[in-house]
Length: 213
Length: 213
Image (tube, rainbow over the protein chains, first blue to last red):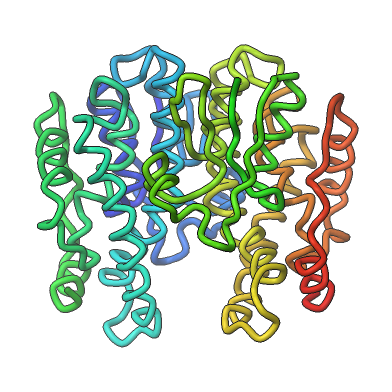
């Protein structure tokens, strides 16, 4: 059985949980307390020297890190994976876009709003993060004018990768009302069979987000 | 024939050039003057709304963006691509690591040193970028204690992805002398058949790097 080491409010972890659920895979979730050094213990760093979740562990103890590499590995051969080579490359292109041009702004703004003190100096980063995050959302919106999904002809791994943090972008202060294409796509993803939402935030994170946005 | 739109000193562009050369592919290189808005023209943005190079264009006008997605697409079925699914996932994991944990520090520090004025306020970012870049290099060094390559059992796409900016890390002020595993691996990559180095920097970039590091 697969073990997924994760932090429940993390979109990168939620991506993998969503695909495992939609594939009907049997798996075990191990919550990692990243706020209290859970990814910095010698035991964790021995498995992932980069000190990040999610971390996937197979039944025989092999380790795979990087959420989008997990999506690719888990989905290969399934309906969530493009069978055509060019479409597969386009899906990967969107997944690299997600990690380089989207997550560092949309996810990091949300992290600062929900998981740093209201007087944290990191809050000075928010205007720049929101500017760059909106640029990424505009690129997504433009694609959605021409196609219903990011994974070739059907819902799949690139949609899962981009959905995770886009669906909770308002937590970081992003207003999705100027992006009707994105809002419709989010609704289509939520309506896919076996969809599971991210678990509810704890009271402290929810209160900080309420006070930040 | 494939057209690669690129900026010669960019490691992300050099990755794709190196693989095309080592595959023996016929291709055309179109230099894009990114310092003077070459990726911000209406013509460019119509092809890549994210406004970045490299951008790959096929003979029939289809577009693929994101350097590591290009490596994956170009290499599929070749010796540079792991045939085994688990090794393929590990290679992708390193490629996502490269874009998330390595390039934003190692490449951006180099960009600031070589392509911003010596009194640019962006130079205040350098200490933090170097700290995070060294963390990425330490993760690579640890892997190289256990394996000669990042792409499964042989040289391939993950090595090409990580080589590009690691080989020019000194341009950003990174000292590789504490990383013998990395230095040996760089030498092994340079010795692969058909290897081509990044073109020499222009005089202005070279002088700024000289003055910065």
